[in-house]
Image 1 (cartoon, rainbow, N blue to C red):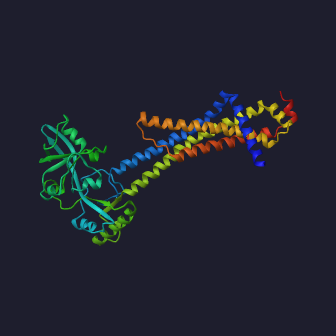
Image 2: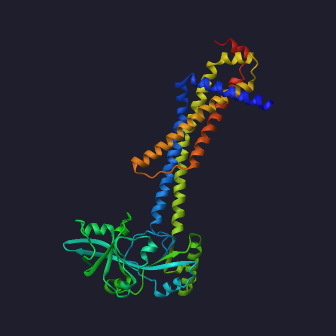
Image 3: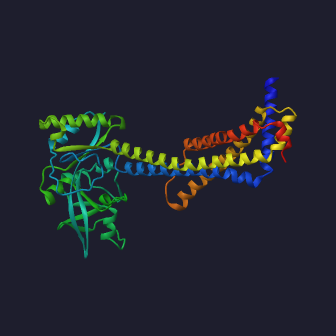
Length: 412
């Protein structure tokens, strides 16, 4: 029976609170407006932060899957996308490649050598500057950089040192601005003729879109004359073993060179997981900062609730006195005013959630930015709104419960 009575009292408190809120619709809406704006801001700004993280991760995935790159030269950090330069002496040899290829298949899936130089391209009366990349036929698989028209060169092209080339999207637009079919066209790269066999997909990266790719054997014979290469691209078997594989390759290459440590090495390894981890940390910090800034508006909304509830207590002093005279206890009055505060904050929170979703959709639809609303951000924002109502509604409720019944009845 006691539980039933408590349920009835809760229902009555809720009904009275709703009637009180609806009797002052305009004031109630303005009271909840701070919470609405706060919740919507938290959801929208965290959606922007998560969307930025998602966009960067998608861009990183275009570099390749489970990618390690062994670079020539002294260690320069972990960048996978540093600009290609021609002033770094290639130091990687066939022995280095054979050592990496000899690792078990549960560590290394495939490898592709790579060297590059700045090239000058010519087709008919048009010229273009581009990065000339000499590499292996499996390069598109490792670097996730594939032709969208035509084909990439084959092992047969590599073995026969054929002068064939796959060109980047930007290079295609510069050499073929009229949109003609480039397949079969003969272009000159640093004065040597090459037949176009494919056009690569557009990546949005100048280092890839303004490039041309040729067989490494042709690159060595016609352009560089160098029997070493600047980079070795490695596809690891799984993300979980990339750090293990990096340590293994460093150890084996140091042993091959008879060097004591990486401090004296003439190579270094960039790990895709390092870059992803750095970007994730930055994006999470950015999202937390945006969410924290937006949460301030929730605090402002909570102060608004407290102010209005204090006004409500003053306006309803006589009503409170009558209820006390009829037997209402201090806890009953406190519960009612807390219920009103929670209803205002919960209602504002629900409207804010809907507004946050709408704003996130609108920003992505019309603003061109990627947004991602997560259940966690919605739950945190709504929970914070409820806690705001409880916290800032507590003092007005306490004030109401501490009123003297006789003084309250005398109040006009």
